[in-house]
Length: 228
Image (cartoon, rainbow, N blue to C red; front, side):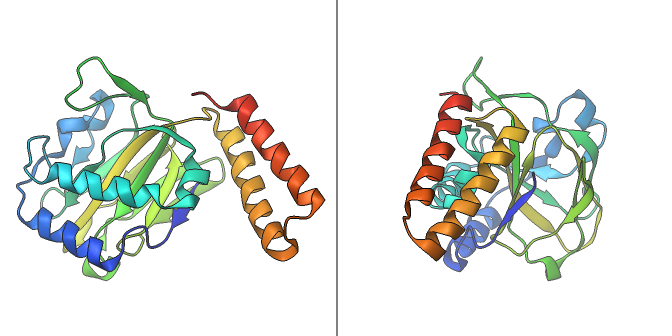
């Protein structure tokens, strides 16, 4: 399931993000790459000791918490602290790879988060760079994603994906991994579709008895499938 969410960050928040990033130093993107990914990863990333990284992470997590669409699409149980990367110049691409199933929590030795869902929050305006398309392969084909600054794409961590070379400008983004309350992607899709249909029915019909009953069915399925 691939879901895009517009305007996760406001213009003011985007301005704050870029101001903090401009004061930061980039390091090799292979800091968080697994064995397979390291062979095809050629970008830059903010290191864990970057002075402004905590503030950037706090800002992004706060924005995600106020997005009901993000919650219903991902059903997050645990969110790994967000990372920030840059594609520009000679460090401009990331070949096809699959994200590691288990991700080590930064600065918490021995603590892991299972990566069920991955997300990319675009921070650069699409007209400011060429290339840099997030390319995701799933059972329905290949999808290219290049969103407006402040918008987010959510997709299964199990998918094979890549970022095409940036040939002009720079592409700055935030990427994150999360463990969902519902591990199975098919079940998450059913719950998302039901929640979206209920939202529409509630707006058109109000809290009618059938809508109340279907809402109960949604939550009973969530109780059956969710981990906590």
